[in-house]
Amino acid sequence: MAGDVLADQVGDVVGTWYGYVAAHPHLLAYFSPPDGEPDANYLERVRPRFEQWILDTCRRPYDQAWLDYQHEIALRHTRSKKDQTDHVNAVDQVPLRHIIAFVYPITATIRPFLSQKGHDSADVERMFQAWFKAVTLEVALWSRPYTLQDAW
Image (cartoon, rainbow, N blue to C red; front, side, top):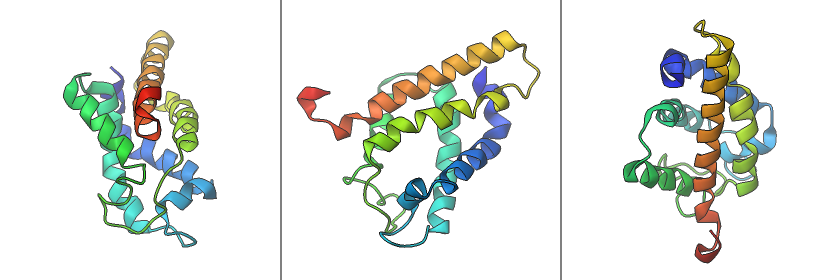
């Protein structure tokens, strides 16, 4: 249900999140070369993947392909693959603490979008809780490359 509600709003959702990142220089730095200005082209290349991630979070089955892609997303935030997909020179790793902390804005800002299609408050709450659980699960999976194998 959340995927259907958000499908035509993904651009606006990502715009809200980009506004949040832009308002926090320590987050915007991950789209910038060390000691440099944000790379606007990099931000624009990431946007469609971020929009697709919203739909995937709501709709993709939790199968091995989904698990493999969650691992790929995780790697793209670590030194092993950060900046390679878009061939950019930006800070080489997003610290795990920022990945974990981002659960809050990604979740707190979604409710107004879930409320846009006239669903009753109970349905909006169910979609919101499902979103929160899915994002929390993804962030847990994204933490794997940051840990020792025997500690994950």
